[in-house]
Structure formats: C-alpha cells, structure tokens
Image (tube, helix red, strand yellow):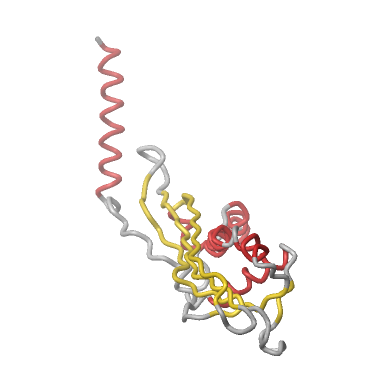
Length: 195
C-alpha cells in the first residue's frame, strides 16, 4: 500500500530531477534560434567545468538541439574540425525555501526552487569564438514536507537534494499552540451564544 501511495505522489508532483530539467530547458529556450542565426546545422557539444550533473546537462542539451532539427555530432568520432558548442554549468541546483501551512492546522509545505545558469560558447572550425552568452532558468513550486524527501532522488546527486530548512515551530510546542487556538475559538463561540 505504501509503495502504491508513493508512486501516486510521484506521478502527480514532478521529482527534483524533472523540476531541474524544466529549469535547464528554460535556460536553453533561445539557443536554437541563436545557433540558426550563425547558420549552424551540425554541432559538437562539449562540457567544461566540474559539475556533478554534467551528464544530465549534456543529455538535455543534445535532446533540445535534436528536437530543434540540429545534427549533434560525437566529438570523439568527428575529425575535430566541426563547430563546437561549449557548455559550462555555472549553477544547476534544487533548493528549498520557505516553510508554510495552508491553514493554521494543515500539513506543512515547503517551497522548492530549481535554478540553472549556463555559460554557452560557440566556436567555429578554427576555434574562434562566434558567440558567448550566459543563460539562466528557474522553476519553483510548493510540495508537502513529507513528499520532499521522496522527490529528492539519489543522494549521490547532491545538486538535486537540497537541504530542507530546519523544522521550525515543531515538536511539542506546535500541537499545544494549535490546541490552545482551537479551544479559544470554541470558548468564544459558545460564550457568545450564551449571552
């Protein structure tokens, strides 16, 4: 039963990886038009930097270019004289923001923010820079506190598993405050009817 419920939750709410992919795709929205402006049809994608999500970024870039009609060449197979699109990730991360409740007594919710910032450089056959732009994208939503750990993904991918904010106002104090507020409301309701 628990596995079925967990699967249903994941089907309705995007995982951290899906949210990161949305932010990444948003940062790449202008790229096909920019490449077309330089007459590019075939391109090699090259990653630089040391982001642990390089494989994910390259996979998404290749997918976006392929869907836009570009031919993406493998750098290892090509003769090294083609046009190169160099991608350097400046930031790709999923973080958590503010914690809130929809009502006084409701399930705790946390804001989830996926940010992506890339440095994109286009080099011609001779290695001359044709274009160098910095792109960014951001996606955010709100998920229940209990779902946040399920949606995080593998602990190996630290860029997908941001630190949840400290559980402020929790523990024994929160139920006492809620009980006090509810008791006060009940008292006010019945005391106003007695008059």
